Length: 144
Image (tube, rainbow, N blue to C red; front, top):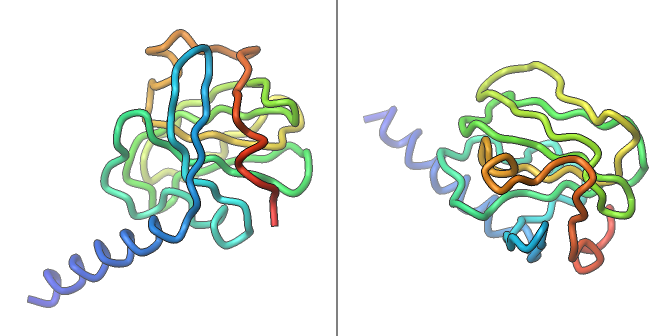
């Protein structure tokens, strides 16, 4: 019974965390997606942790305060993801595949302003590679 209650609380907490984040629509090479926006330290630290699934064409956009060599990891993240690191103009620098519940650091190949996490293989399935431009970032707001 305790494990059932704990699982229920985790599901409720995950739903509340998702509902608190603003969303924005982005386009890459004609492919539209909806991204939750993580623009402050707490949101960026939590990211997609504790989620059991991520719908197709949905992801999370991380907006960093500084352009730097940002890195991502998958601690407490159950969904396999691909992350695209973007420069301040929205051009994809590099894309890294990440496995669930690992602490391996996946970093930008050059200083980045944004990171976009999607389901594992989302970018590859659509032929999206480094150099592609992400459109709509200006509507996502600024880092806080």
